[in-house]
Length: 143
Image (cartoon, rainbow, N blue to C red; front, side, top):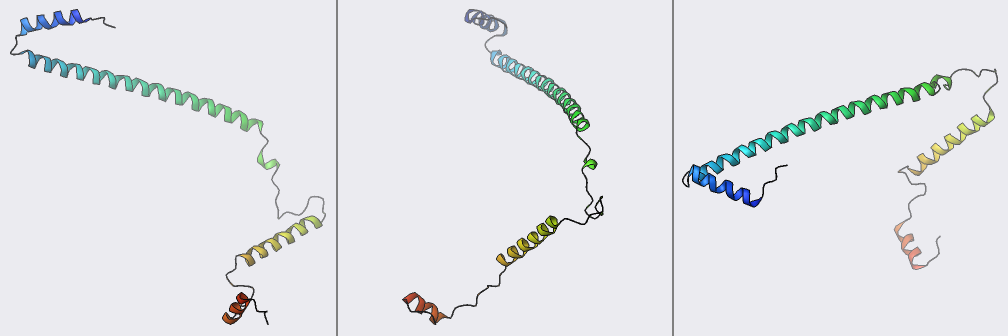
């Protein structure tokens, strides 16, 4: 932005030394550094505020687009009540439940019973006495 070379900086330093004097120059440079630090902090704060405002505007725009897209999808999809079946209601044609659904229910009961038996803590076979397990390990036939 500002194209200042080494010669210009040297000229500014010499003029500052002559105008301010060697005694007050360190204090002047210190206060100049503080002022530039405050200016940078203010510009950083301002820039972050603008960035946050831009992010919020983008989020609001995206949210509006998502809502419009979601509304379009929901309007094009059939209603869930079109597919709802009440399991307690009698069949519409007056027929009894099919044998296939009864067989499926029996299969589900068998599967639940098998799962309960597999997870049971009670063993299905009686425990083997200690001397029998030692004899079996030695190769003796079981009585």
